[in-house]
Length: 443
Image (cartoon, rainbow, N blue to C red; front, top):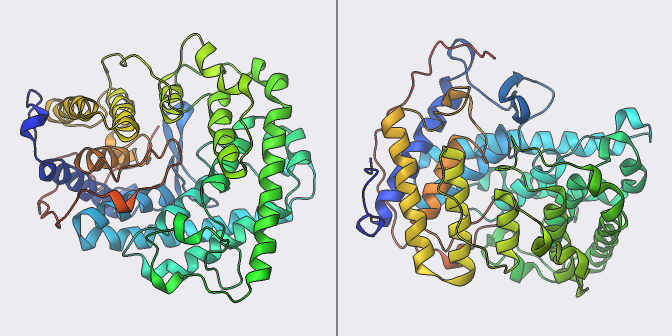
Protein backbone atom coordinates (compact mmCIF):
# COMPACT_ATOMS: atom_id res chain seq x y z
CA UNK A 1 0.00 0.00 0.00
CA UNK A 2 1.23 3.47 -0.87
CA UNK A 3 1.45 5.76 2.12
CA UNK A 4 -0.69 8.88 2.00
CA UNK A 5 2.36 11.14 2.39
CA UNK A 6 4.43 9.35 -0.27
CA UNK A 7 5.71 11.58 -3.06
CA UNK A 8 4.41 10.55 -6.52
CA UNK A 9 7.94 10.99 -7.86
CA UNK A 10 9.01 8.13 -5.59
CA UNK A 11 6.28 5.78 -6.84
CA UNK A 12 7.09 3.65 -9.89
CA UNK A 13 4.52 2.75 -12.49
CA UNK A 14 4.66 -0.80 -11.16
CA UNK A 15 3.37 0.44 -7.81
CA UNK A 16 0.27 2.01 -9.35
CA UNK A 17 -0.35 -1.08 -11.46
CA UNK A 18 -0.04 -3.30 -8.40
CA UNK A 19 -2.70 -1.16 -6.70
CA UNK A 20 -4.96 -1.46 -9.76
CA UNK A 21 -4.50 -5.23 -9.81
CA UNK A 22 -5.24 -5.47 -6.09
CA UNK A 23 -8.57 -3.70 -6.59
CA UNK A 24 -9.20 -5.91 -9.61
CA UNK A 25 -8.74 -9.03 -7.47
CA UNK A 26 -11.20 -7.65 -4.93
CA UNK A 27 -13.69 -6.89 -7.70
CA UNK A 28 -13.51 -10.44 -9.08
CA UNK A 29 -13.86 -11.86 -5.57
CA UNK A 30 -16.99 -9.78 -4.99
CA UNK A 31 -18.49 -10.83 -8.31
CA UNK A 32 -17.88 -14.50 -7.55
CA UNK A 33 -18.91 -14.58 -3.87
CA UNK A 34 -20.40 -11.24 -2.86
CA UNK A 35 -24.09 -11.81 -3.59
CA UNK A 36 -26.93 -13.04 -1.41
CA UNK A 37 -25.78 -16.01 0.69
CA UNK A 38 -22.41 -15.91 -1.01
CA UNK A 39 -23.76 -16.48 -4.51
CA UNK A 40 -22.27 -14.74 -7.53
CA UNK A 41 -23.22 -11.18 -8.47
CA UNK A 42 -23.94 -11.05 -12.17
CA UNK A 43 -25.66 -8.33 -14.10
CA UNK A 44 -28.86 -8.88 -12.14
CA UNK A 45 -27.66 -6.36 -9.54
CA UNK A 46 -28.47 -2.88 -10.82
CA UNK A 47 -27.30 0.34 -9.19
CA UNK A 48 -29.87 3.11 -8.62
CA UNK A 49 -27.54 6.08 -8.46
CA UNK A 50 -29.91 8.72 -7.09
CA UNK A 51 -30.84 6.55 -4.11
CA UNK A 52 -27.40 4.97 -3.67
CA UNK A 53 -28.93 1.48 -3.50
CA UNK A 54 -28.75 -1.75 -5.48
CA UNK A 55 -31.82 -3.67 -6.56
CA UNK A 56 -32.14 -7.14 -8.02
CA UNK A 57 -33.23 -7.12 -11.64
CA UNK A 58 -33.17 -10.14 -13.92
CA UNK A 59 -34.58 -8.37 -16.96
CA UNK A 60 -31.68 -6.03 -17.59
CA UNK A 61 -27.94 -6.20 -17.24
CA UNK A 62 -25.58 -3.51 -16.15
CA UNK A 63 -23.77 -0.91 -18.18
CA UNK A 64 -21.28 1.74 -17.03
CA UNK A 65 -23.22 2.35 -13.83
CA UNK A 66 -23.60 -1.25 -12.74
CA UNK A 67 -22.88 -4.77 -13.73
CA UNK A 68 -21.54 -6.56 -16.73
CA UNK A 69 -20.55 -4.14 -19.48
CA UNK A 70 -18.51 -1.66 -17.44
CA UNK A 71 -16.88 -4.42 -15.41
CA UNK A 72 -15.92 -6.27 -18.59
CA UNK A 73 -14.26 -3.12 -19.92
CA UNK A 74 -12.21 -2.47 -16.78
CA UNK A 75 -11.13 -6.08 -16.31
CA UNK A 76 -10.17 -6.40 -19.98
CA UNK A 77 -8.06 -3.27 -19.65
CA UNK A 78 -6.42 -4.56 -16.46
CA UNK A 79 -5.65 -7.84 -18.19
CA UNK A 80 -4.12 -6.06 -21.18
CA UNK A 81 -1.83 -4.08 -18.86
CA UNK A 82 -0.97 -6.77 -16.33
CA UNK A 83 -1.30 -10.09 -18.15
CA UNK A 84 -3.40 -11.59 -15.33
CA UNK A 85 -5.45 -14.48 -16.73
CA UNK A 86 -8.07 -14.24 -14.00
CA UNK A 87 -9.02 -10.75 -15.14
CA UNK A 88 -9.51 -11.66 -18.78
CA UNK A 89 -11.47 -14.81 -17.88
CA UNK A 90 -13.95 -12.75 -15.86
CA UNK A 91 -13.95 -10.01 -18.51
CA UNK A 92 -14.99 -12.56 -21.15
CA UNK A 93 -17.77 -13.87 -18.91
CA UNK A 94 -19.07 -10.38 -18.19
CA UNK A 95 -18.75 -9.43 -21.87
CA UNK A 96 -20.92 -12.40 -22.79
CA UNK A 97 -23.60 -11.10 -20.42
CA UNK A 98 -23.30 -7.60 -21.88
CA UNK A 99 -23.62 -8.93 -25.43
CA UNK A 100 -26.87 -10.72 -24.60
CA UNK A 101 -28.31 -7.65 -22.88
CA UNK A 102 -27.27 -5.37 -25.76
CA UNK A 103 -29.11 -7.67 -28.17
CA UNK A 104 -32.18 -7.59 -25.93
CA UNK A 105 -32.12 -3.78 -25.86
CA UNK A 106 -31.84 -3.69 -29.65
CA UNK A 107 -34.85 -5.98 -29.94
CA UNK A 108 -36.73 -3.73 -27.54
CA UNK A 109 -36.15 -0.78 -29.86
CA UNK A 110 -37.30 -2.87 -32.83
CA UNK A 111 -40.56 -3.73 -31.04
CA UNK A 112 -41.46 -0.17 -30.10
CA UNK A 113 -44.96 0.59 -31.33
CA UNK A 114 -44.87 4.35 -30.94
CA UNK A 115 -46.73 4.51 -27.63
CA UNK A 116 -45.25 6.79 -25.00
CA UNK A 117 -45.72 4.13 -22.34
CA UNK A 118 -43.25 1.71 -23.88
CA UNK A 119 -40.49 3.98 -25.17
CA UNK A 120 -37.19 2.12 -24.70
CA UNK A 121 -35.33 3.71 -21.82
CA UNK A 122 -31.87 5.09 -22.28
CA UNK A 123 -29.60 7.44 -20.38
CA UNK A 124 -26.22 9.10 -20.28
CA UNK A 125 -24.45 6.00 -19.02
CA UNK A 126 -27.27 3.46 -19.21
CA UNK A 127 -29.05 1.67 -21.99
CA UNK A 128 -28.02 1.00 -25.56
CA UNK A 129 -25.57 3.90 -25.93
CA UNK A 130 -23.59 2.70 -22.93
CA UNK A 131 -23.54 -0.92 -24.11
CA UNK A 132 -22.51 0.17 -27.59
CA UNK A 133 -19.63 2.16 -26.11
CA UNK A 134 -18.49 -0.74 -23.93
CA UNK A 135 -18.59 -3.27 -26.76
CA UNK A 136 -16.61 -0.97 -29.05
CA UNK A 137 -14.12 -0.52 -26.23
CA UNK A 138 -13.80 -4.30 -25.87
CA UNK A 139 -13.26 -4.63 -29.61
CA UNK A 140 -9.90 -2.91 -29.10
CA UNK A 141 -8.78 -5.26 -26.35
CA UNK A 142 -6.61 -8.35 -26.63
CA UNK A 143 -7.72 -11.47 -24.81
CA UNK A 144 -11.46 -11.37 -25.58
CA UNK A 145 -11.21 -13.60 -28.66
CA UNK A 146 -13.80 -16.12 -27.33
CA UNK A 147 -16.51 -13.47 -27.68
CA UNK A 148 -14.95 -11.32 -30.40
CA UNK A 149 -17.32 -12.34 -33.19
CA UNK A 150 -20.33 -11.97 -30.89
CA UNK A 151 -19.17 -8.47 -29.98
CA UNK A 152 -19.20 -7.33 -33.60
CA UNK A 153 -22.53 -9.02 -34.23
CA UNK A 154 -24.08 -7.22 -31.24
CA UNK A 155 -22.66 -3.88 -32.40
CA UNK A 156 -24.07 -4.45 -35.87
CA UNK A 157 -27.49 -5.38 -34.48
CA UNK A 158 -27.56 -2.31 -32.23
CA UNK A 159 -26.61 0.08 -35.02
CA UNK A 160 -29.21 -1.42 -37.36
CA UNK A 161 -31.89 -0.97 -34.67
CA UNK A 162 -30.80 2.62 -34.06
CA UNK A 163 -30.86 3.42 -37.77
CA UNK A 164 -34.48 2.24 -38.00
CA UNK A 165 -35.70 3.87 -34.78
CA UNK A 166 -38.00 6.91 -34.86
CA UNK A 167 -36.07 9.22 -32.54
CA UNK A 168 -38.20 12.26 -33.28
CA UNK A 169 -41.34 10.49 -32.07
CA UNK A 170 -39.52 8.93 -29.12
CA UNK A 171 -38.09 12.27 -28.02
CA UNK A 172 -41.59 13.71 -27.98
CA UNK A 173 -42.62 10.93 -25.57
CA UNK A 174 -41.90 11.08 -21.86
CA UNK A 175 -39.22 8.41 -22.03
CA UNK A 176 -36.85 10.52 -24.14
CA UNK A 177 -37.74 14.07 -23.11
CA UNK A 178 -34.13 14.77 -22.18
CA UNK A 179 -31.19 15.48 -24.42
CA UNK A 180 -28.67 13.30 -22.56
CA UNK A 181 -29.77 9.97 -24.13
CA UNK A 182 -29.67 11.49 -27.62
CA UNK A 183 -26.32 13.16 -26.95
CA UNK A 184 -24.83 9.93 -25.58
CA UNK A 185 -25.79 8.05 -28.72
CA UNK A 186 -24.43 10.81 -30.94
CA UNK A 187 -21.14 10.89 -29.01
CA UNK A 188 -20.66 7.13 -29.37
CA UNK A 189 -21.71 6.98 -33.02
CA UNK A 190 -19.51 9.95 -33.94
CA UNK A 191 -16.33 8.60 -32.36
CA UNK A 192 -16.10 5.09 -33.79
CA UNK A 193 -16.50 3.23 -37.07
CA UNK A 194 -19.62 1.18 -37.68
CA UNK A 195 -20.10 -2.58 -37.62
CA UNK A 196 -23.16 -3.33 -39.72
CA UNK A 197 -22.09 -6.14 -42.06
CA UNK A 198 -23.80 -9.52 -41.81
CA UNK A 199 -20.61 -11.15 -40.59
CA UNK A 200 -20.23 -8.54 -37.86
CA UNK A 201 -16.85 -7.15 -38.90
CA UNK A 202 -16.08 -3.41 -38.90
CA UNK A 203 -17.24 -1.45 -41.93
CA UNK A 204 -16.54 1.93 -43.45
CA UNK A 205 -13.51 3.59 -44.99
CA UNK A 206 -11.89 4.62 -41.71
CA UNK A 207 -11.52 1.20 -40.14
CA UNK A 208 -7.74 1.16 -40.23
CA UNK A 209 -7.38 4.55 -38.57
CA UNK A 210 -10.18 4.18 -36.03
CA UNK A 211 -9.51 0.57 -35.05
CA UNK A 212 -5.76 0.76 -35.54
CA UNK A 213 -4.96 -2.01 -33.08
CA UNK A 214 -7.80 -4.37 -33.90
CA UNK A 215 -7.03 -8.05 -34.40
CA UNK A 216 -6.42 -9.36 -37.92
CA UNK A 217 -9.22 -11.91 -37.67
CA UNK A 218 -11.67 -8.99 -37.66
CA UNK A 219 -10.04 -7.08 -40.49
CA UNK A 220 -12.21 -5.52 -43.15
CA UNK A 221 -12.26 -7.04 -46.63
CA UNK A 222 -13.53 -5.46 -49.85
CA UNK A 223 -16.39 -7.92 -50.09
CA UNK A 224 -19.80 -6.28 -49.68
CA UNK A 225 -18.08 -2.92 -50.02
CA UNK A 226 -21.06 -1.23 -51.66
CA UNK A 227 -23.48 -2.56 -49.04
CA UNK A 228 -21.22 -1.35 -46.25
CA UNK A 229 -20.94 2.08 -47.82
CA UNK A 230 -24.72 2.18 -47.86
CA UNK A 231 -24.85 1.22 -44.19
CA UNK A 232 -22.39 3.99 -43.39
CA UNK A 233 -24.61 6.48 -45.19
CA UNK A 234 -27.59 5.28 -43.12
CA UNK A 235 -25.67 5.87 -39.89
CA UNK A 236 -24.50 9.23 -41.19
CA UNK A 237 -28.16 10.16 -41.62
CA UNK A 238 -28.83 8.88 -38.11
CA UNK A 239 -26.10 11.13 -36.71
CA UNK A 240 -27.64 14.04 -38.60
CA UNK A 241 -31.04 13.30 -37.05
CA UNK A 242 -29.63 13.06 -33.54
CA UNK A 243 -27.67 16.28 -33.94
CA UNK A 244 -30.81 17.97 -35.29
CA UNK A 245 -32.79 16.98 -32.19
CA UNK A 246 -30.12 18.45 -29.91
CA UNK A 247 -29.82 21.71 -31.84
CA UNK A 248 -33.58 22.15 -32.17
CA UNK A 249 -34.15 21.67 -28.45
CA UNK A 250 -31.13 23.56 -27.11
CA UNK A 251 -33.21 26.52 -25.94
CA UNK A 252 -36.55 24.76 -25.57
CA UNK A 253 -35.75 22.20 -22.88
CA UNK A 254 -32.44 23.08 -21.28
CA UNK A 255 -33.66 25.97 -19.08
CA UNK A 256 -36.05 23.54 -17.36
CA UNK A 257 -33.36 21.00 -16.51
CA UNK A 258 -31.82 21.79 -13.11
CA UNK A 259 -28.49 20.32 -12.09
CA UNK A 260 -28.77 17.62 -9.45
CA UNK A 261 -26.11 18.59 -6.88
CA UNK A 262 -25.97 15.02 -5.53
CA UNK A 263 -24.88 13.59 -8.88
CA UNK A 264 -23.01 16.57 -10.34
CA UNK A 265 -19.68 14.90 -9.57
CA UNK A 266 -20.68 11.87 -11.63
CA UNK A 267 -22.85 13.09 -14.53
CA UNK A 268 -22.09 15.92 -16.93
CA UNK A 269 -24.99 18.33 -17.26
CA UNK A 270 -27.37 18.08 -20.21
CA UNK A 271 -25.75 21.07 -21.87
CA UNK A 272 -22.20 19.77 -21.40
CA UNK A 273 -23.09 16.36 -22.82
CA UNK A 274 -24.73 18.04 -25.79
CA UNK A 275 -21.64 20.16 -26.42
CA UNK A 276 -19.41 17.07 -26.22
CA UNK A 277 -21.59 15.12 -28.65
CA UNK A 278 -21.93 17.96 -31.14
CA UNK A 279 -18.20 18.62 -31.07
CA UNK A 280 -17.56 15.03 -32.13
CA UNK A 281 -20.31 15.19 -34.70
CA UNK A 282 -18.82 18.40 -36.11
CA UNK A 283 -15.39 16.78 -36.32
CA UNK A 284 -16.77 13.79 -38.19
CA UNK A 285 -18.81 15.84 -40.70
CA UNK A 286 -16.64 18.97 -41.02
CA UNK A 287 -19.56 21.01 -39.73
CA UNK A 288 -18.86 23.95 -37.43
CA UNK A 289 -20.16 23.57 -33.89
CA UNK A 290 -22.76 26.31 -33.24
CA UNK A 291 -20.84 29.07 -31.49
CA UNK A 292 -23.50 29.68 -28.84
CA UNK A 293 -23.16 26.07 -27.70
CA UNK A 294 -19.39 26.04 -27.57
CA UNK A 295 -19.35 29.42 -25.81
CA UNK A 296 -21.71 28.12 -23.16
CA UNK A 297 -18.73 26.54 -21.42
CA UNK A 298 -17.26 30.03 -21.04
CA UNK A 299 -20.55 31.56 -19.94
CA UNK A 300 -21.52 28.99 -17.32
CA UNK A 301 -21.28 30.53 -13.87
CA UNK A 302 -19.88 27.41 -12.21
CA UNK A 303 -18.99 24.20 -14.00
CA UNK A 304 -19.64 20.93 -12.22
CA UNK A 305 -16.85 18.41 -11.80
CA UNK A 306 -17.92 16.40 -14.85
CA UNK A 307 -18.60 19.53 -16.91
CA UNK A 308 -14.99 20.50 -16.33
CA UNK A 309 -13.92 17.25 -18.02
CA UNK A 310 -15.91 18.20 -21.11
CA UNK A 311 -14.38 21.69 -21.11
CA UNK A 312 -10.82 20.32 -20.83
CA UNK A 313 -11.43 17.86 -23.66
CA UNK A 314 -12.44 20.81 -25.84
CA UNK A 315 -9.26 22.72 -25.06
CA UNK A 316 -10.55 25.06 -22.35
CA UNK A 317 -8.09 26.31 -19.71
CA UNK A 318 -9.51 25.96 -16.21
CA UNK A 319 -8.17 26.80 -12.74
CA UNK A 320 -7.08 23.89 -10.58
CA UNK A 321 -9.94 21.96 -8.98
CA UNK A 322 -10.70 22.13 -5.28
CA UNK A 323 -8.99 19.71 -2.92
CA UNK A 324 -11.18 16.57 -2.85
CA UNK A 325 -12.80 15.47 0.40
CA UNK A 326 -14.33 12.19 -0.82
CA UNK A 327 -13.14 9.18 -2.78
CA UNK A 328 -15.39 10.08 -5.69
CA UNK A 329 -13.92 13.57 -5.55
CA UNK A 330 -10.41 12.09 -5.70
CA UNK A 331 -11.34 10.03 -8.75
CA UNK A 332 -12.84 13.10 -10.45
CA UNK A 333 -9.78 15.27 -9.78
CA UNK A 334 -7.40 12.53 -10.94
CA UNK A 335 -9.47 12.15 -14.11
CA UNK A 336 -9.32 15.88 -14.74
CA UNK A 337 -5.57 16.06 -14.23
CA UNK A 338 -4.95 13.00 -16.41
CA UNK A 339 -7.03 14.64 -19.13
CA UNK A 340 -4.98 17.81 -18.83
CA UNK A 341 -1.78 15.78 -19.08
CA UNK A 342 -3.16 13.88 -22.06
CA UNK A 343 -4.10 17.02 -24.00
CA UNK A 344 -1.32 19.37 -22.87
CA UNK A 345 1.57 16.96 -22.09
CA UNK A 346 1.99 18.82 -18.83
CA UNK A 347 4.06 16.63 -16.53
CA UNK A 348 3.09 18.77 -13.54
CA UNK A 349 -0.52 17.65 -14.04
CA UNK A 350 0.56 14.00 -13.96
CA UNK A 351 2.59 14.55 -10.79
CA UNK A 352 -0.39 16.30 -9.22
CA UNK A 353 -2.69 13.43 -10.26
CA UNK A 354 -0.39 10.97 -8.53
CA UNK A 355 -0.43 13.09 -5.39
CA UNK A 356 -4.22 12.79 -5.31
CA UNK A 357 -3.79 9.07 -6.01
CA UNK A 358 -1.84 8.71 -2.79
CA UNK A 359 -4.72 10.42 -0.97
CA UNK A 360 -7.18 7.95 -2.49
CA UNK A 361 -4.97 5.01 -1.49
CA UNK A 362 -4.56 6.52 1.97
CA UNK A 363 -8.32 6.68 2.47
CA UNK A 364 -8.53 2.92 1.95
CA UNK A 365 -5.69 2.37 4.39
CA UNK A 366 -7.30 4.62 7.02
CA UNK A 367 -10.93 3.51 6.70
CA UNK A 368 -10.55 -0.04 5.29
CA UNK A 369 -13.00 0.96 2.55
CA UNK A 370 -12.57 2.70 -0.77
CA UNK A 371 -15.76 4.74 -0.29
CA UNK A 372 -16.05 5.40 3.45
CA UNK A 373 -18.34 8.38 2.86
CA UNK A 374 -20.98 6.27 1.07
CA UNK A 375 -24.04 4.61 2.55
CA UNK A 376 -23.45 1.15 1.12
CA UNK A 377 -20.32 -0.94 1.68
CA UNK A 378 -17.82 -1.51 -1.10
CA UNK A 379 -19.12 -4.97 -1.94
CA UNK A 380 -22.15 -3.35 -3.63
CA UNK A 381 -20.24 -0.68 -5.49
CA UNK A 382 -19.72 -2.34 -8.87
CA UNK A 383 -20.00 0.75 -11.06
CA UNK A 384 -17.30 1.42 -13.63
CA UNK A 385 -17.76 5.14 -12.93
CA UNK A 386 -18.28 5.17 -9.18
CA UNK A 387 -17.14 1.99 -7.49
CA UNK A 388 -14.33 -0.53 -7.29
CA UNK A 389 -13.94 -0.74 -11.07
CA UNK A 390 -13.55 3.04 -11.18
CA UNK A 391 -10.79 2.84 -8.56
CA UNK A 392 -8.97 0.15 -10.57
CA UNK A 393 -9.32 2.19 -13.77
CA UNK A 394 -7.98 5.27 -11.97
CA UNK A 395 -4.85 3.51 -10.69
CA UNK A 396 -4.29 1.96 -14.13
CA UNK A 397 -4.39 5.50 -15.53
CA UNK A 398 -1.79 6.70 -13.05
CA UNK A 399 0.39 3.79 -14.14
CA UNK A 400 -0.07 4.26 -17.90
CA UNK A 401 -1.42 7.79 -18.47
CA UNK A 402 -0.88 7.86 -22.22
CA UNK A 403 -3.11 4.85 -22.78
CA UNK A 404 -5.70 5.94 -20.20
CA UNK A 405 -9.11 7.19 -21.36
CA UNK A 406 -12.02 8.93 -19.67
CA UNK A 407 -15.04 6.63 -19.65
CA UNK A 408 -17.21 9.50 -18.47
CA UNK A 409 -16.43 11.19 -21.78
CA UNK A 410 -17.03 7.91 -23.62
CA UNK A 411 -13.42 7.85 -24.83
CA UNK A 412 -11.44 4.82 -25.99
CA UNK A 413 -7.91 3.76 -24.95
CA UNK A 414 -5.00 4.87 -27.08
CA UNK A 415 -3.37 1.45 -27.33
CA UNK A 416 -0.59 2.76 -29.60
CA UNK A 417 0.62 5.19 -26.94
CA UNK A 418 0.85 2.73 -24.09
CA UNK A 419 3.90 3.32 -21.90
CA UNK A 420 3.79 -0.21 -20.44
CA UNK A 421 6.69 -2.09 -21.99
CA UNK A 422 6.73 -5.27 -19.90
CA UNK A 423 4.13 -7.34 -18.11
CA UNK A 424 3.79 -6.12 -14.55
CA UNK A 425 4.01 -8.97 -12.02
CA UNK A 426 0.96 -8.30 -9.83
CA UNK A 427 0.65 -9.18 -6.20
CA UNK A 428 -0.92 -12.59 -5.70
CA UNK A 429 -2.74 -11.33 -2.65
CA UNK A 430 -5.70 -8.96 -3.09
CA UNK A 431 -5.91 -5.79 -1.07
CA UNK A 432 -7.45 -6.29 2.34
CA UNK A 433 -11.16 -5.55 2.32
CA UNK A 434 -14.47 -6.53 3.78
CA UNK A 435 -15.68 -10.09 4.11
CA UNK A 436 -17.93 -10.81 1.16
CA UNK A 437 -19.34 -14.25 1.99
CA UNK A 438 -22.75 -14.84 3.50
CA UNK A 439 -23.88 -11.24 3.18
CA UNK A 440 -27.34 -10.26 1.96
CA UNK A 441 -28.32 -7.37 -0.24
CA UNK A 442 -29.93 -4.62 1.76
CA UNK A 443 -30.98 -1.04 1.49
